[in-house]
Length: 70
Image (cartoon, one colour):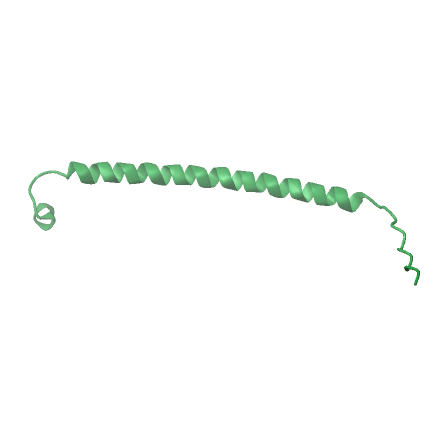
């Protein structure tokens, strides 16, 4: 029945199988790239938060600017 629905009696088309393998490999590559980019983003966010906390911990009194003479 399944063979009749597919329209032929032979096995799977080798071109279709090759395309399926290529697409599966591409999906794996993209998933790996996504994980790498997420890790890099997490590291950058942590560095930015660390830098912000360092800047917040510095307590420098900046004197008020004097008005310009007119």
